[in-house]
Structure formats: C-alpha cells, structure tokens
Length: 103
Image 1 (cartoon, helix red, strand yellow):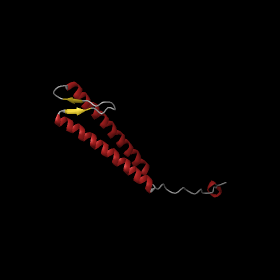
Image 2: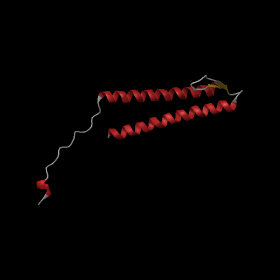
Image 3: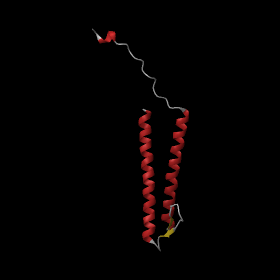
Image 4: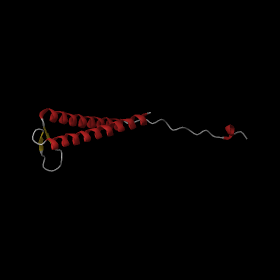
C-alpha cells in the first residue's frame, strides 16, 4: 500500500512570534547591561587617569593610590577589568543566543 495515500497530513504549528512584553524586557535588560559595562569602563579609565581607585567590595571601601600602594592599585584595576570583561562576555553570549532563537 502506498504511504502517501494512507497518511493524514498533520497541521504545522504557527511560527514563533515574540510578544511585545518579552521584546521590551529583552531590550531593557540589554540596555541595563550596556549601561553597567559603560559605567564600569568609565570608572576604570577614570582611575587610570587620576591614579586612585576605590574598591567595590560590600564592606568598608578603600582607596588605593598608584604612587603609594602600586601593587594594591594595579591588582584592583585588573580585578575590576576582569569583572567588566566577564560581564561583556555574558552579554555577547546572551546576544548570540537571542539572535539564534529569533531565526
């Protein structure tokens, strides 16, 4: 028996359409992450220009000067740069996933 004649064609589901709410939430999260990356880059560049950096810990904040405590200053610059790079990597990975799911 021929399978084409006996098989009932099944209806295909409609293509995925993103809702307005999820679009605006995605846009808001993207803008917040972009703002956080920009603010972090601004603080790192400003600390390199001025020669003083303040820690971002939850306890009492400390300020390190490039001339007086160079090891602690450069450690804090590198530590904040790593955090910024990780946030940038997460945002790029999220953008890649978002663009793949949109197709």
